[in-house]
Image 1 (cartoon, rainbow, N blue to C red):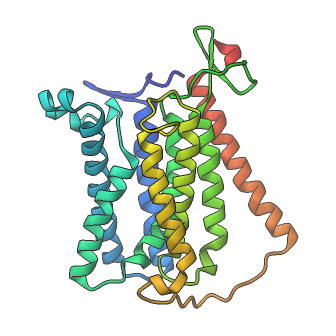
Image 2 (cartoon, one colour):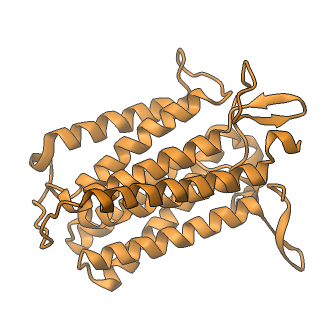
Image 3 (cartoon, rainbow, N blue to C red):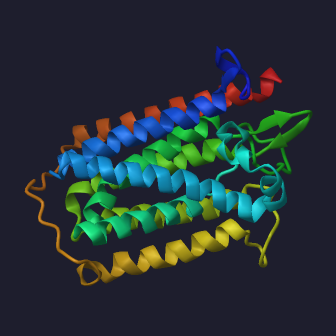
Length: 288
């Protein structure tokens, strides 16, 4: 099945693989975030408010920032295209920044400790990003030599940047899951997510053929470097930078060697299946 081949058709509505991956990732992320919020004993109605604000801010901010930075003339002439999500084009950091502005404004008005809600969203964000990359367009740069995991297009071999992203974000998800009950302060888990996401985006852009804004760095890498530095500061500063200390009622328990092996084997298997799906949508080199 090709990436842009419709998997669902109803009248004039065509839902290709890329859109299906995006929408399912969004729904899975929302469901996981709600369950994480309830696991942290947050009020259900507050969690729903948080998720709605995050969804509206993330999608609108991501599209607007992408349009302003990469295609301002095109979207100025056709503003309705901003709502055509299947066209692609989304700024992750732009969406996250807009969502955080709305969430902190809401938290300030409602006198809430927003970091608790952000911690509940850390794991779902990492997992849904990994899932969503199954349907991402190929943006990897050409390889100097055809490596076994390359994607071949018209005789040229390219880096499978989506496969790299799936593996990186799944590794981040597993790391956050291990740290979930070991947080020292509110907001630590989300800071770790930002730290990991910043590092991942820096690495991914090195495998892509993108214009360089400053030296060897792209615009996205410069934003990622700034986020990485800020997250590193918050993680290192610890409870001094948080409004409240965490007080988990769950006692820490050491996993047995068998349980640890099953934990990592399950996440490796899941990541492997996602990577296989990514290659299936983009075609393996020997299927070209």
